[in-house]
Length: 158
Image (cartoon, rainbow, N blue to C red; front, side, top):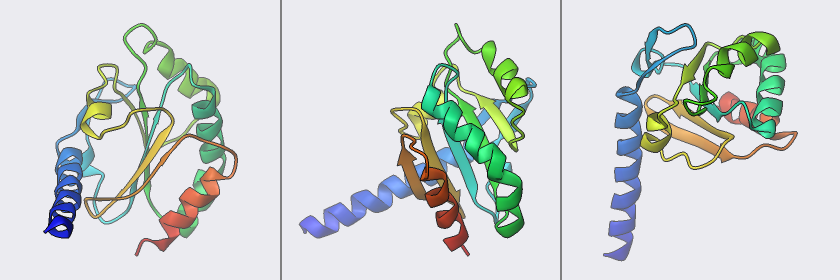
């Protein structure tokens, strides 16, 4: 009975995550609404939660940006950077993205922290990978080399 309850809890949380991503609509740095359900199709969706004040976040996103074009030649996926900057610092996001030359599929603004809460993200940087409406990989924090692990996980998805 205990195993059944644990299994049910795992299935339930997976379904909640899948439903949660289908319902997410957020503004990008250009002010346009983006629905994640439109991106989360037959290719993986990588969501990286970050903030302008978070040095490990900046380091991670710089490394991802440097590798993104090569990675996508080997395994196509969408990469979405989700800024969790609050209303006091959200104005810096577009300047940072443009200044760094980041060319992600989308940069979304989550200044109300609603996406972060909906997907149970507690800290930045956090990376989530969804594939076929399921959360298949998550990682909190960043140290050099984590991007290699992320790409290895993406290549496993078929």
